[in-house]
Image (tube, rainbow, N blue to C red; front, top):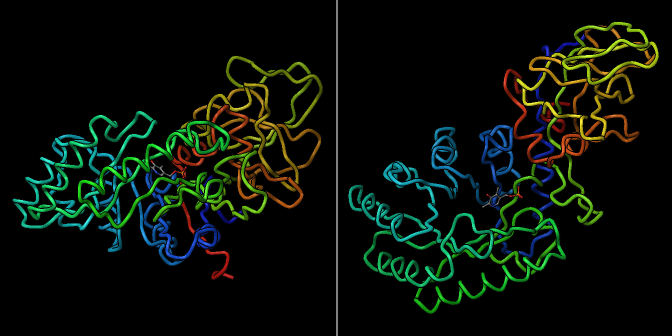
Length: 386
Ligand SMILES: *Cc1c(COP(=O)(O)O)cnc(C)c1O
């Protein structure tokens, strides 16, 4: 009988530390490392991952929203912390009191930040974002000189320090894509414009995980690594072979039921799959209510689970709470451990988040980030628990 719950997410904090240290080893001395823990640490737990990343030498933590940044402070982290997605009316007072670096995309945001600096008497820390081609957040090139000028004036007035200039890549996982050169060039120009306006930010940064491993020329002063600290390949097929990352997340469950079916029996909603010979089905007790994609295995690539040293394909639709997988003629019992995905096994018998991404027509980021729902998350430390 298994010792764990119905179904759970297990996160190995030793893997996080290993991945941060491995990625940091790719950097020139002096380049800072930001561990990106937005979206609850890509589903791994922002506070726990943040703590492990700091232990392994992460200088900065990065998140999207101000709420996430405040939760990191509530969890006790006092180190350098950047957030980059705010909306009008955001509680900048709390940001200043929490010593959180804010990103500004527009003069209107700087106006709001100035109000908070006036009312609290605390000088903000502001990182300006230039849109170099992603066309998402950030100031466009034509709006950049005005943003930079406003930022310089506010710095002189004492409302803030401009601590950084940064941007984000559109195609970092495709190293030969022309966008990479264009964005690097646009970024260098934006930094030069800011320098000419008198700004001297301590940090210029552009690289995400993929650029950290594929494009050292744009490490600048800091790299922002998300997916790679969780041990997943940021650029499957393009990454160097010496990545040496360890996936930190395992999702496992107890087999809920085992049953024999006959040739001609169909499985799950809409009867998408029909057995052409007698076989044994196992029942996995989690489904799209836990973030297992409903389209798994319907796009021509089998989704698989791992059990007793073999892979077994999902059969029929993933349901809200459960799905069936095909044991063939292998033996299994209710209560046996079945793994949805985890770090690769040496013999290939355990599916990975990347395998699930391919079976669902998505990327490994989405697989780990969406997993949750009713699953309990537990932590282990494969180095220290032994
Ligand atoms: C999510 C995010 C990152 C991290 O990207 P990865 O590809 O996961 O390394 C870096 N910078 C910004 C602005 C992001 O939104």
